[in-house]
Image 1: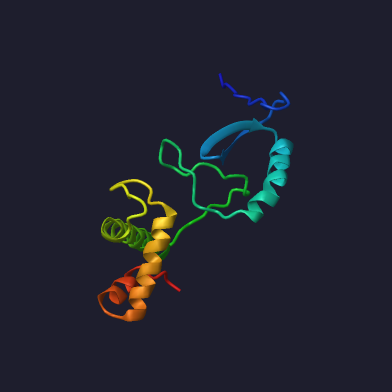
Image 2: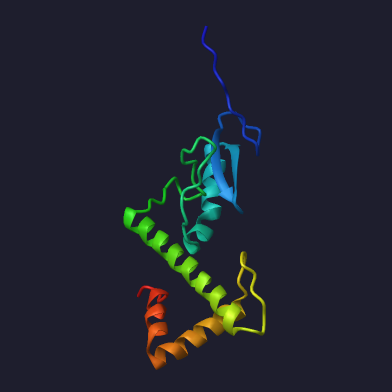
Length: 152
């Protein structure tokens, strides 16, 4: 004897729905929708998706890619070059923050900087201004400044 499972729409209560996963505000959701309701959801989200920037694939507990964020099932795939560039960018930022902390301990008396956590923007701006001044004078600081130069 065969059994059939019928999904019921979470919105209208109609039979014949399917599960549609999506993500919003860092949380993933699933909702059972009929084809018409799914189409309405995708149409509604289209202008937001087109105006937004895709940042990756939402992964579920299994590690597999979950459904879309309303983008018609398209997935964002990052190349190994993109991943390597992001890693290098994170390393540059970490190195710069370490340099900012060291500089602030010695040169910036207006505000104390904690050894961990967020570095106040005013301290980073002061460090970069100081570094630019050092670059214009030449020497070791000029070489260090090249390490933190954003890729063009």
